[in-house]
Length: 492
Image 1 (cartoon, one colour):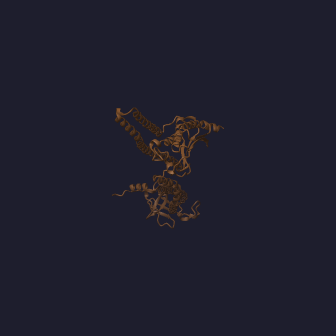
Image 2: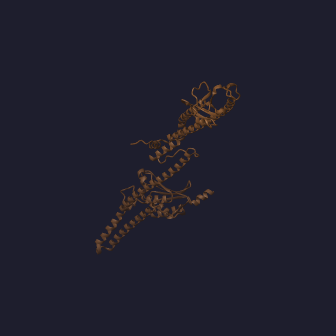
Image 3: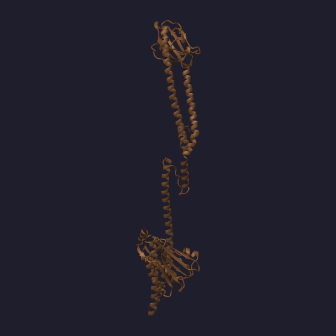
């Protein structure tokens, strides 16, 4: 497989962390900046020094050309006005028309003279650069002036010092660039790590959420930064995702619970309806078997029993349909009603059912709630009926209606045998009976308290029981007061 540097570089960059990428980009930018600034500085310095050297070369060439044209064989370097302070800084060669050197003045420390071709002698009016003869490492800046008699004066200036200065500047720029990259690595890595710390927190939060902790949120960095705005956006998104996930979980849980309750409901309903249906079928078969031999009284007794079982079965079906409506969260028609008046009517009916039973009512008048009067009466009837059914006939039952802490409180207390904690925790379950030995004719269907609890929940209220074995049971229903009453209370 052939090695491809471009592909390897792209793979390395793709696999590198964000910290490494940022530092690599920063180092690259520093390197490019150092190279550009160094090159620009070197070019400017070189141009400046070269221009200065050219100006000195022209000034010296003007003086030297006048002296040579006047026939001065040698130049008095130190005594010439306007000349450089160092005597042998310039090289002078006088070339005849045939190219022979007649006069040479050169600095002593330069053994290599400039290499000038004849073509450069003709028409050269501006300074130009030529390499040294036999030593390409050195160079000269040359200016040619034409003298009388076809001669040429070659005035040259060594560029060794200039090149050395430029070289030292290049080395200094390279060292400065290297130091800058080292400082960037030493100072930039901690700064980048601190700057990217919020992203690390976001990464940790995302990992925790992926592991199942949907309640995790990202810490709040400054909101005026990009990371802060990203954190806010992610927190908003996570809150919506969590809400959607919780809603889905709740929906699935409710669906499973509804399915389980429906399955149990169907099983319990089938079980409860089997007894009256069996009774009706048995009585009907017995009537058919008697035929015309049965007396009128016997037929009347059988029809009465069939009617009783059918009625009980109708009540059970009505209760089941009512619970099914509550399971579907069907709203009730609610109006302001007086709970004390409803309790008074329920107590009057209970006294007619059991005249000798001491049934008392203590009610504040009025206690107004928003509700369905018939359904609230059903709650009271079920609670009072439960007390009458599960306590001795002479045991007292007390009903209280009061306005406490901004809520309507309905209490039904008896002095019966009470219930254990396990029984009390299940007393509102459908078809649950505390005494399994009771017959359905005496013990009821086990739906009364379930219906009372469902009706209380439909009125945005709660129902609880406080009981102990041998100390009776107290059922307490709490309902919100009517909005009209609450508004009047706030105005007061």
